[in-house]
Length: 543
Image (cartoon, rainbow, N blue to C red; front, side, top):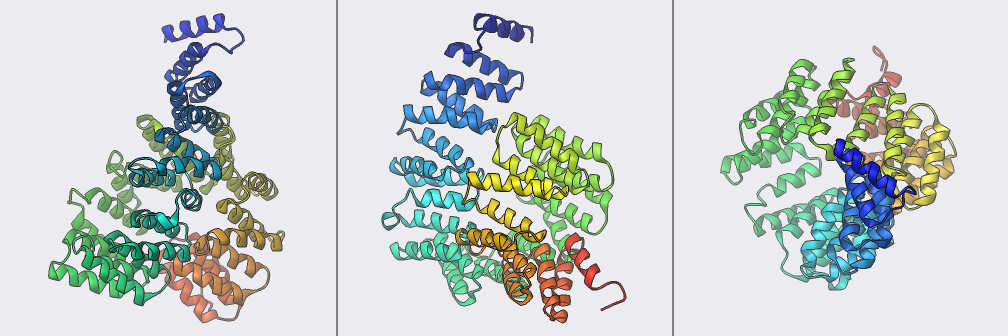
């Protein structure tokens, strides 16, 4: 430490203006990294970037990206790409940072460089997977589609586009790409399997079943459970269960795979006893054991056995599912008022995995707000914004917490400012539209924002829920119920069920509302939105 401090002092004395030569800035950046000051490191490299070479600007880009300092990352990566315009690594990093900043045209240009290189298919697949960790699927799809000539694309690339379209909740576009891939060549298992899921999401049982069976014929080993997967997506759990039991009895699929799917079906349908039995049988398996233990802890939590659940989560604290286990344990601890213990679990993880620090900040802010400590959550985000200036994810989460705090106008103003910079951002459009609708503010404008989001992601259940909710708020309960039914078909989310039931109730379909709420509550018995809604319309002892 003494050596570091002495070197810093000497460099500062030699360069009192703070704008030293490249060697000075590079050394200062590395010293900052050594002492954990990511922001200073990223900014020192960004300051050096205009005069730096490809090696220096690459280092600066990667440091700033890892530090989630997006302005500094953008400054460094622009210089790196200018110095190495055909370098696929530079193009990949450039595209990643551009998408995080919602600079989609810039990301497209970089992805064209990747597409033009050798082994472009493999590199594009790797880049797409990386981008999906950094940005939303609709943005990645727009960037990739703009970098590929569809008419010349291989079946593998078309299937990649179809998968992105499916993840972007644009089923028509997904089907279009999948059909192009199927017409290009002998259909691959991947294309047939994806087609089956697309048809299933659209509710087209006939074509979904045909594609699933074709996928099974194309690769009997990988495709053994395709039909069961399709039946599950079509919300036919009994048929899916019978198919899995048939496969297990015939030895047509590995028992561990059929049992895993049967356990998940039981859990999703609310049959916790059956799910517990099946996951207990699976927890001894090396390939799935830790995941099975995680589900067993979840089941214990749902059954009210909190100590058993906490013990299960703690046993997984250093496993392959450590982060999920720690977060769920922290939720339980927060609920029991053990705040310091909960935060300690998360902080201990970051101490061992410092690369998770940024995402953990978002997780902690959300947890704090969920358990009545919105002010602490906001303070955490404000502190993070000082280290990661103008970061879109931090600003978005800040807007969400401001609304929870009751500072609706501040939340709306922040979302509007962000939309001014990112006018096509589906997440922002939906968030602002829903916030306005939920508070009865500027309902026509709210509906316009939500409908704009639906152009990009027409089958997105969250956005359909928002549209149904704003229609309900505008007095169209029947129209809202239709939209909310579609949203719930796509994603059996408890909040969507609560909204759908209310729309049905208000439109006079009270029996159906009770059925919707009852079925949803069986799946999610601890759902606060459902409990609140049922309490409002069906107080205990009344119907």
